[in-house]
Length: 162
Image (cartoon, rainbow, N blue to C red; front, top):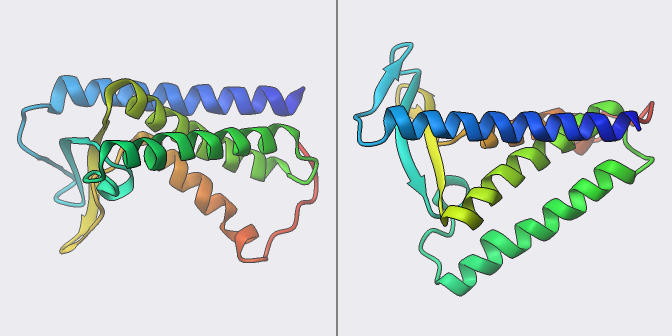
């Protein structure tokens, strides 16, 4: 029961925060020039992305886009969520990581299904080294992936189950 509550709370938090920040971006950044925050380290700019990460697939034909950007992610997110909820091999850290990945993925997938695009609005970087434009759902996904990095590299072993 504790695991289910943790997963639901993290899904609601990540999806809710992403939805809220995208609404703020639409309200305050749409049709506005790029804004520098903390020098040029962090920038805000409104972008509507019809693809996936770094606009991957934006130019695909509609049928391919449906399969690659909607159906496949739906199946993978569903499988990840079921694994997160029911696997006895996961510890609390992994449950949190997979919940963040799922929440971010669900939020972006929701946008892609309902709007045909995802709102991105943040850029980070130093000098010429810059990220692509991303959103809060992407941040949740990346935090989850970084949390899983020790396990993916073979340095972490599950100790206690959530």
